[in-house]
Length: 81
Image (cartoon, rainbow, N blue to C red; front, top):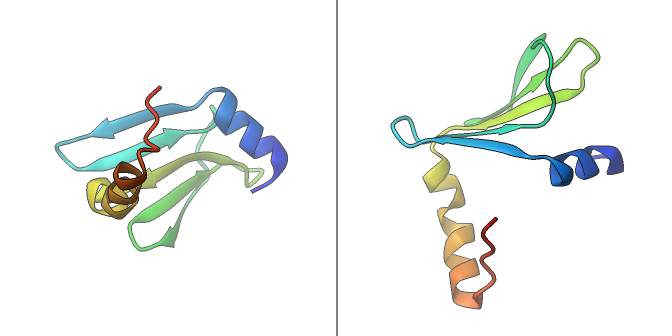
């Protein structure tokens, strides 16, 4: 991920979690979706016509993040915004 993408994500992330479907969606940039690409099992990205990332969708999010959260809880490094 390029430096400009990291700055954009850090500066204004918009995150939506749907507990009913256990889906986490991270909005990166406004725009019209041109392409939807699965980059890993249950993890997809939306791209615009310039191949810029518009958003990231994570299915079964609680299972994906469970190991990470367990490790963070042990080390007490959990941050809430």
